[in-house]
Image (tube, rainbow, N blue to C red; front, top):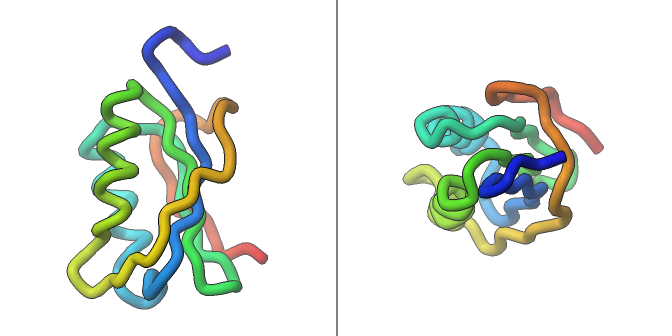
Length: 97
């Protein structure tokens, strides 16, 4: 159960987001915003992430994901799911299908 004022989202980030420091940038940014969750590359060239925390911080993370690190060229940030309970802290996971 998600505490009041918290939210969890699963997102897919598309564009030039692999090989440009996007996962490490996401990890650092999420930790600065005190979010839980994870980030990983997908074999289709996108990046997938789960962000969980206070709603304003999650919203800020989504805004920042649309910009990404300097070498990224984000074309789309899609929320693919809401809810759930990721593990505590933030992690970088291996690439998945």
